[in-house]
Length: 117
Image (cartoon, rainbow, N blue to C red):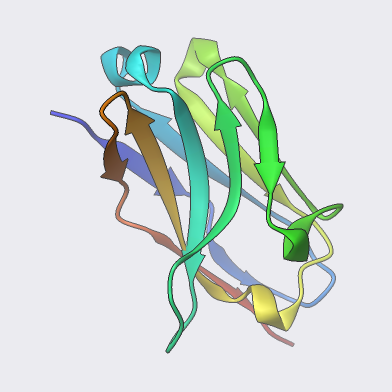
């Protein structure tokens, strides 16, 4: 059974930082084309934040370029999202997604990020 488990969300002040983690099962992690972080704010559609391929290529939404960094640790089956200079508009539920050939997408349960003073 595929399982993606996110962690690292929380409440942070504007300008602060958080690091999100997404841990996958080993077999799944080795079979994916890419993994990504998406977010969904209240009343809005889910949107792409950043993705990283199985060879380490990355892509970011314009709204987070220069502030967020996606990375992966293959030994730990984990993808990270380092978020710096957080803004109120970054407040959302953040979801991890893994895509296998097909394509077939698998989602985590989400982690809340709230940026507020």
